[in-house]
Image: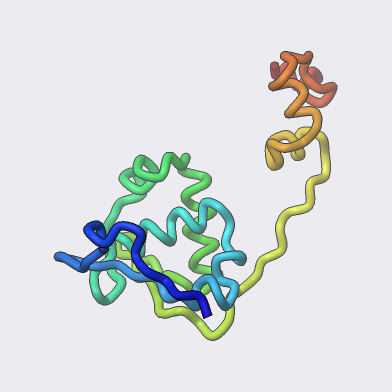
Length: 147
């Protein structure tokens, strides 16, 4: 067994005022891995801003501003969390739920075209080369008149 002790005892965390928490089961039981990047950001923000019943009133424009999300990414993340049974939303109020028994996994979208690959996966070879070497746009983007 590993013996743990604080590295800097003078800086121990303590609960003062309101307190947000995420069950360790969120990581251990696979909920963390079942969420997209934007879903994770939105979920953690909603946990942080909600009251003891999991309720919060943050508007989409405030959420988008705090998380640097555009409206489409916000809507996709919100709907994904609803679909995965982690939150509810009535148009005004969010409720963060207690964790369900198991995470809901949704299949990731299949990348079909070069344009989809560039938009969906910034780690594609074409995208990396264009960024690194200032290469000409891919054939798919030249046809669309994009840089």
